[in-house]
Image (cartoon, rainbow, N blue to C red):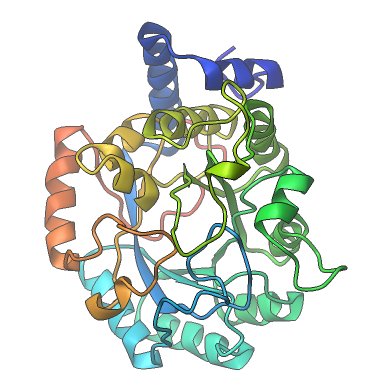
Amino acid sequence: MLGPEMPLAEIEAWLREDDPARLSELWGAADETRRRFVGDEVHVRGLMEPSNHCVRSCTYCGLRAQNAAIPRYRLSTEHVLTAARQAHELGWGTLVMQTGEDYGLTREWVADLIRAIKRETPLAVTLSLGERPREDFAAWREAGADRYLLRFETSDPALYAHIHPPLSPCEPNRIERLRWLAELGYEAGGGVMIGIPGQSYEILARDIDLFRAMDLDMIGVGPYIANPDAPLGCEDALPDGEQVPADELMAYKVVALTRLVCPEANLPATTALATLDRAHGRMLGLQRGANVIMPNLTPARYREMYRIYPGKAGYAETAEATAGRLRGQLAEIGRRVGVGPGGRRQGQSEE
């Protein structure tokens, strides 16, 4: 049953599927579902990373507070506004602001920045600033933020605790915060890493089932890429046959299955996917269910400092070069750059 009601056991079976002919059926079903529910437009979101400071100790992430190997930075309001203007000039409909969890970026500073972006441009604003208090989320929504992305990385409580140590014993988890965001009127986005050491096929199938249960507006999934400056490693992996591989094929499967169970959601072909498969990753992701790309607008000298994992694809390319390359690549696969903010299209299936 390749559709929204796919049973959990069938999701897991597809995650384990290796037969090329069967997988071709999966890719085709996902692409057709994408076409019917979100169309042929690929929405381009300009990504800006205003800070790489973080108070968290996530065991997979190079921005973790304990990592002294990277220089830290915070960018100015004008840096972010320059990126917003550039995104608008290139015809992209959204600015995504992504940072570590940095309380040096105060509630008031972020709210003022959102208002400035909205005054100067028609862009939608997506935030991905970590696990902030509900009062921060409310203030930023009131200032005009449209979307908030907070990937929960895994739905398994034990694995989550291992990769994401809490700051305090009683803090709300990311899934609870995603519910706050929906209540506040954001388009709420979650997502997971694929192939985290300790992630079983059953856990990953439950992640996909949770996307469906939460009816998320945006879902970002991408392969786990090890970082030598973070302690999570292969010694945490499960035995052969139980551990989900962190490879591009598994990432394509998760993108396709997510599209099938969440047909209206906006799904990016992520930078992590493009990092593993530099020649084809993004375009294959778009042909297997995705409909969003997020090129980087962070000033070049700071991009390498935003080192969640090493060797990110596209970190040295200018925005103008990216825009030209994307137009050509999208035309080759019969797709086009989307116009406008590209929010979730609810109830607009193109039968």
